[in-house]
Amino acid sequence: MTSVRIPDGWPTTEGAARAVQDGLRGRVVLDEPGPPPRTGRVTGVDVAYDDERDLVAAAAVVLDGASLEVVAEATAVGRISFPYVPGLLAFREIPTVLAALDALPCPPGLVVCDGYGLAHPRRFGLASHLGVLTGLPTIGVAKNPFTFTFTAPATPRGSTAPLLAGTEEVGRALRTRDSVKPVFVSVGHRVGLANACAHTLALTPAHRLPETTRRADALCRRALREAVGADSGADQGLPSGPGRTGGRDPLSRLGPPDRP
Image (cartoon, rainbow, N blue to C red; front, side, top):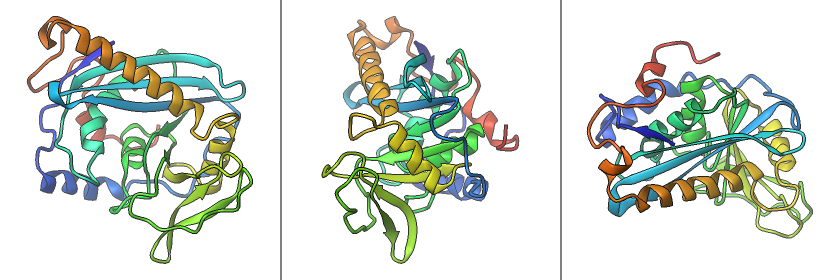
């Protein structure tokens, strides 16, 4: 498990975080289709919190795109890096998620986030933010439609309906199981919306949520339990001040081009 410090210069106010979003949003790539479904590697990322202890744990689980078997996994745990503000949740998660991705022994391929990409009030959710910082193709698969509207898709698996902000399509409601509540798919970075939905269907052979999300959720919860079970943050090696250990400084990713 990698230990993570809050990086120097990380935003601490809503205004500073929104300024970072404004600066990065224009770097989202929307004109690439992304890798074909059922090929290469697909990685799920997810986080779990213990707000009382000021801890966040992140997990990255790499699956083979064809078999959905686990190829690699990594976790990271650190201090919560930003207060809870709707629309700015990425700033609570990004440092620890990046550390988990950095700890993987292999390239992650497509990254699937348990959350939003363009389906975000500022069109820059976690999937887009993570994609721009890493250059990786990313999508968001969320459990609810956030603030957006949709008409229920038809009941068969694979049916879709636009997820709308007014008349703008920001994602799609996708039925992954017959007659079961849909999930909400949006583009993050370097993947088209139709391909994002196709990937989501490939990742949901038996359950409503993608296998990437299910496995990353279980792993980050286990990592959090292990961190909480330690006698104290100091005993676990968890840092409490600025700076970061394990992998690269997340802020160093803001300078280079966003393509690999």
